[in-house]
Image (cartoon, rainbow, N blue to C red):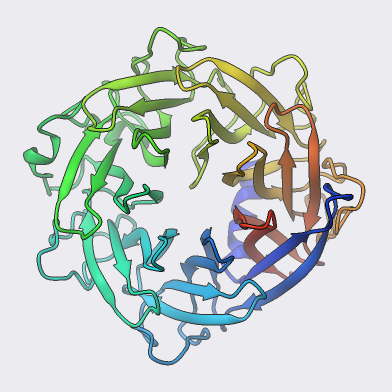
Length: 474
C-alpha cells in the first residue's frame, strides 16, 4: 500500500490544481446535482490545492502551491517568487484574484475568510517569510533544514493587495490547520519539534491545560520527537491570547485538525504516539488507539472532553482538515482505517477493502453517536483530506479511491472510476452522508483519464458542494 501512495504522490507532484462546484437542483431532487463549473489552474510545474473556504456570498477561496509561471492577477501582493498560493473565485467560477505567497519553501494548507472579506492563511515557510512589524513570533522556529520548515499564519487584505499581518508560528514543521471564531480570532494547530532550538514564550502557556510539550530528539519513531497543541491568536495579530499542549508523555504527531463553535471552545483531532492521552468521564473509548479527539475550554485552561477514536490498525491520520462541528456542537471526524467501531444503522458496517474511509460522530461530552465506513474493494487513500458539515448536520468528505465499486448515488455526475487503468487507478471522490451516518445522500467520482485526488471541500450558502484537488495524465 505504501508503494502505491508513493507513486501517487510522485504523479501528483506534476499535477494541475482543479476546482469544481456542483450546484443543488430544485428541492424535488434533493440528492441530485449538476456541474456548475470546473476549471484547471496551474503552470508548467506541479501544483497542490490544500485548503478551501466559501463565504456567505458564495465566493470560493482556495490555497496550496503554484508554479512560478502559474496565473496571478494584477495588483496582488506577490506576482512572482514564492511557492505558496492563495486565490479567490466568484460563485460562477471566474478568477477574482490569484497571488503567490511566501518563499520557495512555502505551502499554504489552510484558508478562511471572515464576514468582512479578510483572508487568513496558514502553512509552512522557510526563513524568509515577510513577517510584519509587531508580529507575535518574528523568529523562524524551524530546524533550518529543507525538510523541516516553520509554521506561519497571516491575514491578507480582501483584494489580496497586501498583508495586514504575518507571523511565524511554533517551532515545528507547519501549521496545517486553522479556523476563526465569530469574532475573527484564530485557532491554530500548534506544532512542536524537539529538534528545534527555538523555545516558545512561557507566557503563552500561563493558563494552559498542559504547559509542557513532549517528545524528544531521541524519541522512538517520527511521533516521538514531536507534539501538537492549540493556540488562540487575536484577530489583529497583536498577541497570543493563550496556548496549550494536549497531554500525553510520549509525544504525538505535530499534525492536528482544529474546529471551533459559537462557545469558542476548540476541538482538536490528532495522531498520537502517547499511550496516556487524557480521557474524560463521558469518553466512548478510553483504551489507547492511533488517534484522539479533545475539546478545550474557551480559555484553554481545561480539558472538557477527551477520547480515543477506537481505531487500532490502518492509518487514521488527521491529514489536514479532518474535524468539523454541527450547529449542536457534535463533532465529526474522518480518517482512513480498517477497524472503525461502527454503530447500529450505519450506512456501511464493514470495511470493503484494504482500507476504507471512516466517519465518526461524537457528542460534545465524548459519546459515540454514529460511525460508519464508506468505500469499496480497492483502497480509499490519503484522507479524507477535508470534512465539512452543513446547517442540517449533513457531512461531506472528499478524497480519492482506487475502488471500482466506491458507493455512488443515482444521478452522480460521474458514476464510474475513470482512472488511468492498471491495478490501482485513482479518482477523486465526494460523498455526503446524513447527520446520523445512516444514509448516503450523494456520492460521485470526480476525475478523468489520469489520476485524481480531491483534497478540499466546503458547502456553499445555497447548499452547493464545492470541492477542489489535483489531477494528472500519466
